[in-house]
Image 1 (cartoon, helix red, strand yellow):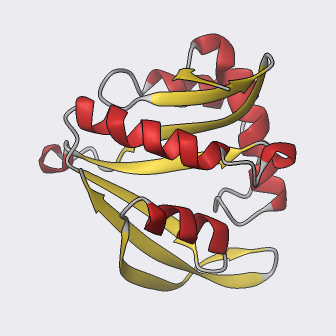
Image 2 (cartoon, one colour):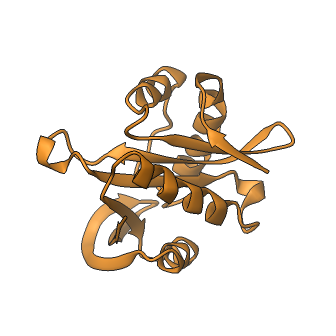
Length: 161
């Protein structure tokens, strides 16, 4: 497996993985699949300060991770929100661990101080992964989302770099 900084050519694969999560999971609270143009715009908002990584196996993008701007207010410039998605058929193989470990190093190198992650409370695999890498639960947002006909709670996790 090769974990590397994402390139513009990776955006269609990132989009495919993300859209699958939109349609089939509560890992994201987006409910409408994104277009390629929307995902390209998202990618363009990243760069050195907010890296995007991909995990590539045999020429296939198996997963991706991004550090996203938390807020456009300048006092939050060193705070980021984590995204981490694995292609369905590659889940449970340790790819998320490797992506997260590398992303934490990238975030520190980019000068970030705090990483936040919002995780739907029934997503035990994601909660476990975050705890394993030192994220702490700092709150629960109750019934803040509706997806698949259910009201959903979100656990807010935080790690200081």
